[in-house]
Image (cartoon, rainbow, N blue to C red):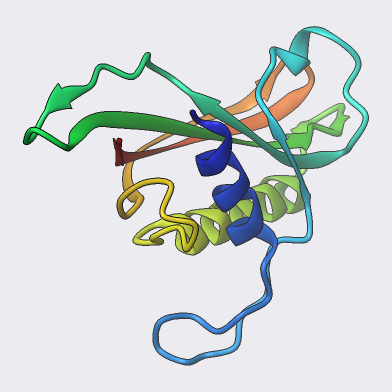
Length: 147
């Protein structure tokens, strides 16, 4: 039920196509995985994304033939937090923030071509500079799933 949304977001994050204004853009070229509490285990990549679906799907009847549910999507943007005696370097923080902002721009307003859900809309941002050895930014989005 959610895999089609996951696949559409994953493709959008790494698809080198034109934006809505016809400007060439590139995807992030980073690993994108379904979130499964990876921070607790061994992390393989130095940076990338996890996609998490925050709530269960509660469908409401819109008509006799259509049911719809809000979908809350959290994109985890993570980067290895290389620490010096002074803390995390400014360059590392800047690179992480640039990656997170690029992902936000790629997804905000995107309507998956596979028809898996309505337009994805940015709804929140939360950042930790060091969490279990990683810089992590949560980028939240909302959409609607129809049946």
